[in-house]
Each structure stands twice: as structure tokens, then as C-alpha cells.
Length: 105
Image 1 (spheres, rainbow, N blue to C red):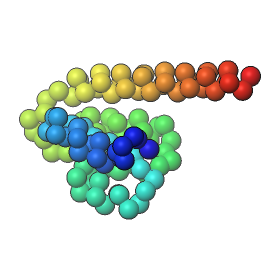
Image 2: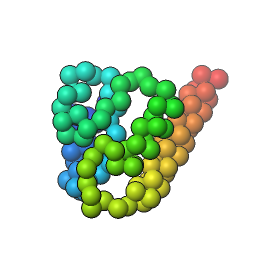
Image 3: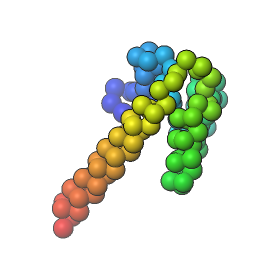
Image 4: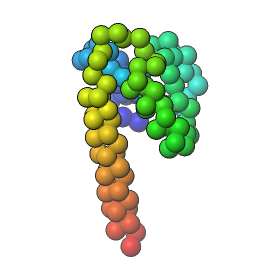
């Protein structure tokens, strides 16, 4: 959970306000949100998912297969941000693992 009662759907909506056509790939384990997300963003990945599925879905989203914005021509730019996000996420998980390891050593 994110602070302040923020969930993934509200975060996606906020991102859409900042940039009208973001590439959003939504993953959730909550079936009650699935219909609302599909209506707004077109694709939902069901958790848990294998990394190979996530990789494939990221490529499909960046290719524009889940949204129909003919004016968005910055897929390469988006790919860079996705890669930065994946790298940052990996570093955070490694750091959390190291801290947890040190706490229980």
C-alpha cells in the first residue's frame, strides 16, 4: 500500500493528468478493480506473474498495443524510462534485502 490511501489506480489517474497519454501497465491481485482498470487503461496483469510475462507485457504496452494514441511517437523515450524504473526497482530490492540480512545476522 502507498501512503495516504493512494492505490495503483489513483496513481495512474494522477500520472494521466500530468501526461495525457502515458503507457500504463497495471498489475493487480484484486479482481474488483480489474474491470475499472481495463475500461480506463486497457490491460491488467494478474498477480502473481512470471518475469517473462511482465517483460512481454511491457514491450506490448510500449508498442502501443493497449492504447490508441496516434500522436504518441516517443516509444524510445518511454523505453528508457521503463529501463530506469526496472533498474531503480532492482536496486531498491537489493538494498532492502541487504538491510534485512544485516538486521537478522
